[in-house]
Length: 370
Image 1 (tube, one colour):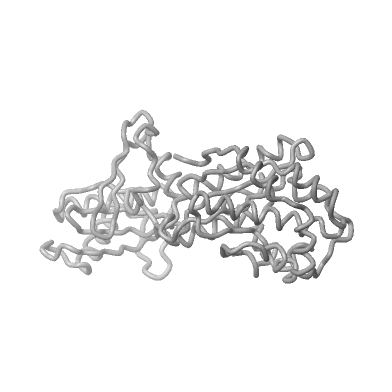
Image 2 (cartoon, rainbow, N blue to C red):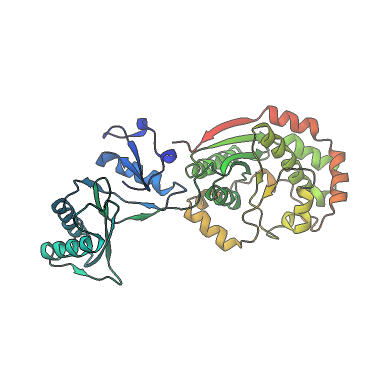
């Protein structure tokens, strides 16, 4: 196979009956070597590997004209067997000593296919199938190339801590930041017994789904029950959600600093809910210093849902288990809070000791590692 990145390949012990999966680095290409029975595993990993433009299954052939033309015929027959009736050939010759140039490869390869597979015809504008020839240190001929996720390789842009709820938005936010090269850690706040164990497991499942794109995620699960009860006891009810978000931000920042993450990531979208007005967003981050990245801030819900479906998180996100953000939610929340008033109310809560205890008692899970 062409086009894989080493970091995202399954470990050799994940190989099936075919044995170990190997990797070879070439100029402009990575070559993944595996037995036929291991191809589904490799292709599954490549389909979720951020940072590659695409891949294809190919055989390595001897660098002779006869071998290349035979491979073209085999690819043509493969396409025809799939019900495809037209094709086009693209060729690249990095080894200039090969007897045929790119034009010659296209024309001779096309002629060989037309002679051997009468049901196929050439269509250079709208082909049903595309056959590619690459002449490198060996010859490679392949069709059915798959498009990759693109983006930047995960981890090349530092690490951030994702506030992972059980909803639709935060997994999408994590995926978008991973697509820009950011390594992802995650934190989930739960309030057992007010939030169920199913809600906790839902967050773990979302971390597993997201981790499959991020080469694994360390999920920190933090009990927030005492802090939520403190907010309920000491704060005006309309402010409960904003103050809870402030406490989460403070706790997340302390965790991020301790594990050397460079920023926080949230799934907030402007004015989607009461706590996400610009005024309330200003309140929730008013007591922390780390940057807060909000990749969904200008997206509407339909686009977020579509992306959640694309990455396979949507069906899990809509399971009917409420997270701690929905507990004790006021019927008429404050919509445009003042950071000064928010800070004064937050001081009354005296959360420092409770946050310290919550951090010490946190559970850390590895999710989505190959």
